[in-house]
Length: 560
Image (cartoon, rainbow, N blue to C red; front, side, top):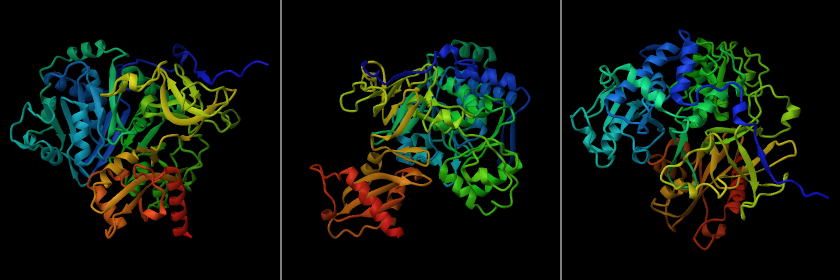
């Protein structure tokens, strides 16, 4: 009787993959803008009016940014921070950076001052392009508080000891101190020969660094994940195929492009297909529905908790969304009275930020009997293995273990972390997720082996939250966990043992936490326990498995 084969499953050869074009970001932009020509590439509605760019406009605006960056001395591989919501200038900044040979570092607009300081410092960007005001946040004011030299009225090159690589900051919005307006910044490139941009773009290779995205991992602060030109470009091309999208796609999304998943899904899914982006800076349900109706959006990219907010919006029954085509009939938008669709969203997939979104998938339209409840088959160029989480040994096919993978879109590494600390001896990235492969080469993902919480489409580190909360007066022990939630995926719940006599409240803890962490990281619930109610480890930690059961029991009792 022969032994069962090991759980090592490879995708098809990369060179056989259809629908793939240039494998640099600058090359991708050139190809899609040449194909798109005078067709609309994006539209954005703001109080001051409506902005519409054609593909030709997008190409010109990106080149404009590239010339300004060259004039500011940005060299190959230098990082350019982009701190913006989903707006036209985000795209011109990111792809302009690529054309100039730089590496765009996308920074979250959810950032608090403490988080922003970490992101700017760790990205080591030499130029920072920001959107000055986002809702109640003034990022120019935030930056000048972090680095007082930015407040001095000295436009031009910046000399900062806190951010030693930073030389220029420009803002969409008003100038202040050493931070100039984006139009003034762009004027710097007026004397740069466009041929220099072409020469730089041509000198970039698929193996070069392409973009730096940040994601909360198992450490207390967001980790910088450096992706290759090839990795990001491949995924931009692939999302057209995943969605089976055609040139009629008009994609609405308010999810930040500074996160890799939203970047790949919305930008790649729309522009690689020759469609258009319907941009919304921040998610406002009523406004979103109006935009979809007015702009005849055919696709909506949203997370589950946003679907329910759209359905609860005051104008839900008043809007005509009959243009919607690329939406699952199983989500609230697909059940809207004016929407009639049978499109299959490619949810049967698995991926991580470290693989720049998807690593295994079934394209839209795959028969359900072929999917069989799985999370797809490996994409071309990828190799998976399932290992014993304790020993690292590959387990037999069909057995459960930890998912490990390598391939064409795997990150170049975490910034500041040696690859030897990230990959195993065979070059595989161990994901911390559990799962198995069946005999047909289909991956079945069974959840995280680590404690990272997936909530509302974002990864949240419990360590990051607890590092903050344990500094609050009256907190003796704190531990944050994720428990199952119908729309968010997981609910972020912080459990606290107070010091004797401490007058702590749920609202008070949440309010304090909001001063330090982005809104999506703030615990949705804070529960208090007596020390005698919990079994603590020797290091004053609560046993996670026992705590999750206790939290579910407490929340169930509240709703009973």
